[in-house]
Every structure is written in C-alpha cells, then in structure tokens.
Amino acid sequence: MPPGPVQAVLTSDAHADAVRADTAAAHTLGITGAPSFVFQHTYVIAGAQPTEVFTDLLRHSWETTESPPPEKHT
Figure 1 (spheres, helix red, strand yellow):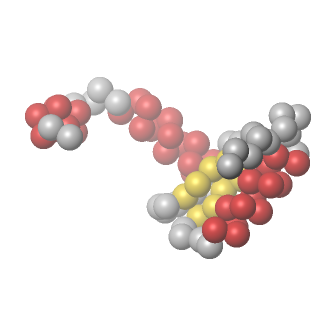
Figure 2: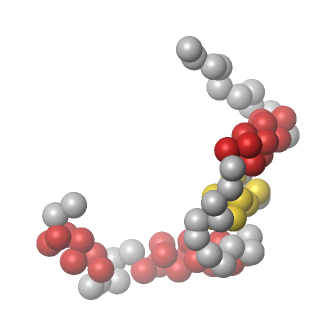
C-alpha cells in the first residue's frame, strides 16, 4: 500500500466510529485478542487452531441455518 494514504488514515478519526463498533461487538462475543474468527455473528474461534476446528464449525453453521452450504466444485 502507498504510505501516504495509510498515514492519512492512521492520523485521522475517519474510521474511528467503525473501529469502536467492531471493538464493542468483539467484547460482546468475549473476544479479547487476535486472531479471532467469528461465524454467523455467534460462533467464535480464538487463536490459531487446526483446520478441523474450522471445518467442524463451518459444518455446524451450515446445519443450523436455512441456507444450504455452497456446492463443492472440483
């Protein structure tokens, strides 16, 4: 990324409200560190986890929603 626009964002409050909203949402879910991954605004995976943890949560998410999972393309 070009340093000029990055510096401009970092030294302004242009996105402060969005950052505060994201931080509040994270705290509501019990997130206190990174990396954290949120699924369906409900399920949280905290920290580095094996692939199986993500796969299991994705399957659970698909099973508990009305929308079917995307078709597998090979």
